[in-house]
Image 1 (spheres, rainbow, N blue to C red):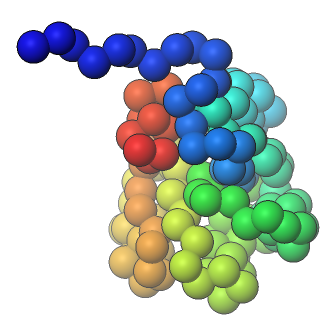
Image 2: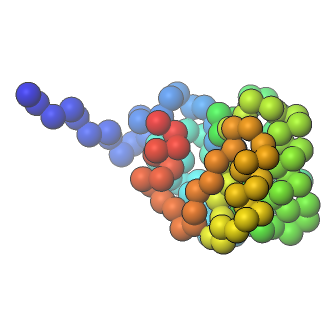
Image 3: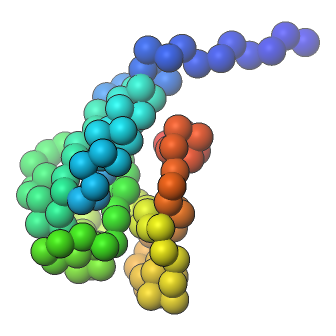
Length: 131
């Protein structure tokens, strides 16, 4: 039995150019994870605040996934999550947080299609989310 070929590092792994919305106020994290998303063959859509994320979601096409930080200036991730869920009830959202607390867990339990991913995360975790 032969091993299956490994994915090429040129971005052909993803499903076409579907987009992933990454919402985080950390510039370096957005840049790095944006490159990972692109490497996997997806179009990264980047936002630094909840307000910016909602603006991005107003423009089609809808992303296949939102990766959302909770601790951000402005409306913050929790309010953004509530608004995202109202406007896009079937859109999967992953809360990415370096501090998992009862509040974080409660948010994931309160809203449908929401899961948790601890920070730091990288290529392997993003690949699993998009599989």
